[in-house]
Picture 1 (cartoon, rainbow, N blue to C red):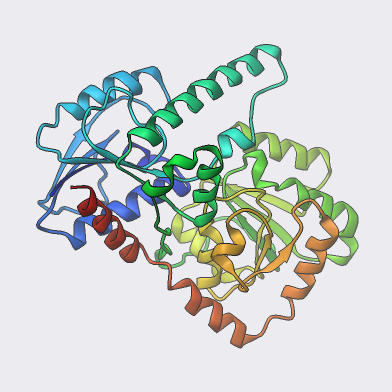
Picture 2: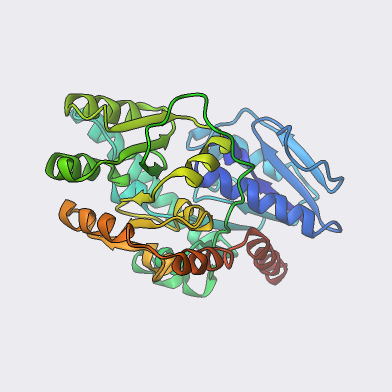
Length: 361
């Protein structure tokens, strides 16, 4: 098979970038007799040097007009490609070759991030309309649709029931981080860890509410590993204004070696997100035998099952209770959680994805 893969998002920190990198790496390694044509912004230096891959560089960015027109023409020009895999909803309308798409979540629709002005509201509404139209068109055009959880599958079917026969649920894998290295900055121990971007739906604000209510009863610090953008900078300002900078610390753009060290050293992972299509950080945490204190929402109960200490995402009292319960964790439970995490593998995801490719061709 000759498979095309739009991997431009591989350069993006977070779940989408990790999905592209991990899945593509496994597909290439597992299938040396297949050939992959991979579109990237810049050819990665830390990727496989396998001979069954052709890199195609482009400056075309995601979520723009040029992507809808120019990227489709670029893909169509790759005459040998039999099937394209688009790892997100943004399939070019001009793409004329067969494709499968991966759909991760409905965050854009469920949690709008427009500003306070009427102009920003109108701009969001226009983007939402375009997004909705493109989504419905692409759900119709796609040969197969991959969702990363049953939760996401049900989210699609509520909007477009006719897509049912096309959807295949293929879970993400557990990413194995490199050897831990202590960060170059000082860490106050003991601490709880939070990992992920700072979009409003990640719900980090509940930790501020928690400390305002229970500061005297909680001695631990909180560290958020995130990426620098307008949302994380706004959160940093909010923390400062709440006079909580001595207890909640933001670490921007940490390396994977630092992330591994933080997992090894934390008391627990706090994951208060209001909506997740899958949720990779909780799996990473339990692979390090750490308790996970998670909001009982969206896909998280499906993925984590009994391997989390659950709380209501809008109630700081239940968060405090879950944190308290996590301190009574047992070694047996830690071992059981770590074994459970291993059932989610990128190797299995790649194997299922290739079977899906074959079913289309």
